[in-house]
Amino acid sequence: MSAVIIDGKAVAAAVRGEVGERVRSLTAAGVRPGLGVVLCGDDPGSATYVRNKGRVAEQLGVRFDLHTPADDSSTADLHALVEQLNRDEGIDGIIVQLPLPKQIDADVIVDAVRPDKDADGFHPFNFGRLAEGARPPVVAGTPAGCMELLRRYDVPLRGARAVVVGRSAIVGRPMALLLLNGDCTVTICHSRTVDLPAVCREADILVAAIGRPGMITADYVKPGACVIDVGITPVDGTVRGDVDRASVEPVAGWLTPVPGGVGPMTVAMLMYNTVALCAARRAGGVPASLR
Ligand code: NDP
Image (cartoon, rainbow, N blue to C red):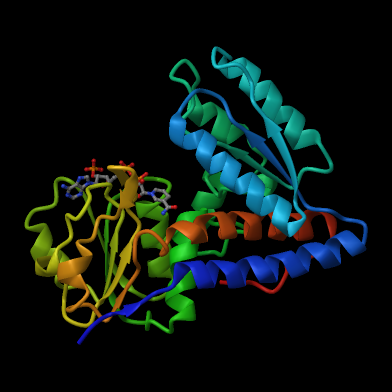
C-alpha cells in the first residue's frame, strides 16, 4: 500500500478560484473586500509570508492595505493602528503578522482586532466560539485548511480517533477543536506526552504540528491512517515537514507532502476568511461555507 498524496496546491487553487468568484460578485455589487495587514519587526519569515499574502490578494482582487510601522514601535502605537483599521469601512479583515518585536505585547494587539474583522481567527472571541462547539465566522487559516483537505479527500471524520501533536494556540489547539466538532475522538499531544509513538499509533487521523523535521516516522503511524503534516522548517534552502515521508508513505492511507500540502491552504483560507467577513458585515450574509 502507498498513501494517497493530498495535493494541497490543487485544493488551494480550487479554494482561491471559489473565493475569487465571490470577490468578483461582491465587487460588481460595489463592495470590494479589503484586507489590512500590519507588519512590524525584522523577522525574515514574516516579510516573505506577507509578500505571498499580498500576491494572492492581488490575484483575487482583494484590496491589500499594508502597514509597516517602525521596528521600535510601542504597544500603544500598534494599538492605535489596529483601531484605525477597525474603524476603516473598506477594511473587512485585519491581520497582525506574528511574531511582533519583543517590546510589544502581542496579546494586547491581537485582542484589539475587532472580532468581526479577525481574518486570522486568533481573537479570543472567535477561538472561544470554536471551543464552545459553535461555528465561529472565522477559523485560523492553517487548521481550517487542514479540515478542508480532509473534507475534499473524503477522509472519514465521524467517530475517527484523531491525534494532534502540538498544542499551540494558532495550530494545535484549534485543529483539535475542529476535529472534535467534526465528531472525531481527539487526543492532544505535546513535548511532555509519555510514549508519543504509541499514542500516535492509535490515530486514524494524525496531525503533526511540531516543528521538528522528520520526527514522525512509520513507527508513529497506524496502517491506513491519514497523516497531515503541518510542520515547516527551513533546512538547507528548502523546507521540511515533521513527517519522514520516505518511511510513512508506504504505511499511511493519505499523506500531505511538504512542500505542497498544508502550506498553500493557509493563505487560501485567509482570503476565504476575509471575503466571508466582508460578506457578513457589508453584504448581509456569509457565503456558502467551504467548511
Ligand atoms: P509551536 O512551537 O508554537 O508549537 C509546537 C508544539 O509542538 C508545542 O505544543 C510543543 O510542545 C510540541 N512539541 C515540540 N517538540 C515536541 C516533541 N519532541 N514531542 C512532542 N511534541 C513536541 O509551533 P506552531 O504550532 O506555531 O507550529 C508548528 C509547526 O507548524 C512549525 O513547524 C511551523 O512552522 C508550522 N506552521 C505551518 C504553517 C503552515 O502554513 N503550513 C502555519 C503555522 C505553523 P510544548 O507545548 O510542550 O512545548
